[in-house]
Image (cartoon, rainbow, N blue to C red; front, side, top):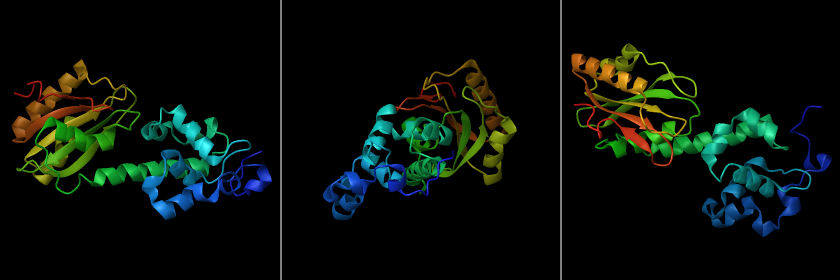
Length: 243
C-alpha cells in the first residue's frame, strides 16, 4: 500500500508537534517569538516535516536523521530522495523533496554572498568561492571561473559532470566561455568526492593541456583548484606548477 502524505496524523498514529511538544517549545511558536536563530537544526527540519511517526515525535525523527549523518546537512543533501524515503519511515517522496529543496535554497543563499563581483586574489579566495558550488556533490564536476583584468568573478560555468571518480574534460569546452566573454583569466576547478585533495596523473595532464591552450589564446590560467570538504583543497598555483 502506497503512503498517502495527505492522510491526517491521527489516522495513521503519527505524532504531530502539537500532540507531543508543549506550545512554548514548538518550533513554529519559538521561531515567531524568538526568531529562527533560536531553533536547533533538528527543530528547523521539524518545521518542514511537521509530522513524526508512531512512537517518535517529529523533532526526535529529525534528531535521528542528523545523528545518522554526523549532524551535517551536506551529508543529508547527498543522500537523495530515494535514500531518505527508504531509510526513514514517515518520510515520503514529497517530504524528501521538500527537505532537499530547502537545503538547496540554503546552499544558494550562501553562494549569493560571493556573487557581487567577488575578487579572487588567492587560492583560499578561490576555494571559498567554489566550495558552496562543489563540496556537496557526490560526483565529479569541472567548472571554470571567468575573471576580468582585476581578478573579479564574471561568471562560473559548469563544463562537465561525471561519475564518482572522474569526469570528461574537453579543452575546447573549457576555453569557450572565456573566449566568448573575452575574459582575461580563468580558474579551472574540479572536485574530489573522495575528499582526497591530491591530484591524479589525469588531473596533471588536464592542467598542462589547459595551460598550454590558454597561452595560445592569451588567457591567463590563474589556478587549477581541486575542491574537497573541510577546508581541504589543492592549488596548482600554490605548488608552483603553473609557471
